[in-house]
Length: 200
Image 1 (cartoon, helix red, strand yellow):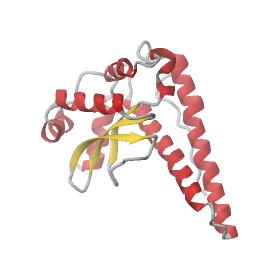
Image 2 (cartoon, one colour):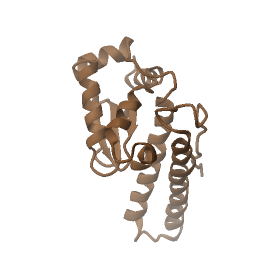
Image 3 (cartoon, rainbow, N blue to C red):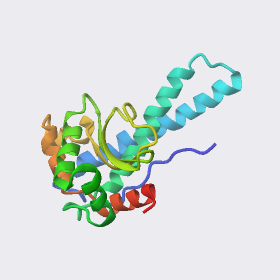
Image 4 (tube, rainbow, N blue to C red):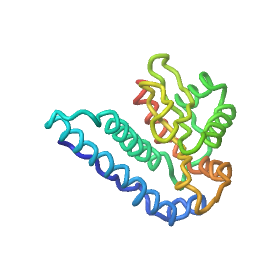
């Protein structure tokens, strides 16, 4: 059975300073993301054992635990690639055109994703996603790692709003952290994800 692995970051832990300190990035990647990878792998083993023994009384809890940890792994893996020390500005080309068409232009989109990220209740994410049924970009709030997600939507740009992503540096002022994230967005990565998802 295949297992999930913690991906290496495409930069060193200090690369995103001063927006994100090396201390936070190391804890976030090496501890929190690693815990989701371990959790997904451990739960897969527990699910396999339940199948082998035909003991399905805990299936609901195991499936929920698996979804939580796998979604945490997936979103963090995207998050690291979405960030770059050379990021910021705004997208152009097909992605920029799609944002204009579906989300009312870049400034309107930026305000919507900022609000989605800063106001998500408890822990969660603000996400720009491609919704394949309607063939359009959407912005959504993701509670924890997997609640309230449009089925089949493909995350393109994800902003982590869990306290472990920012609290050591920004305390309880989540909007300041989100403002800094915009200066790190790797639009080349987001555009490539959009092109793959939308087939453009």
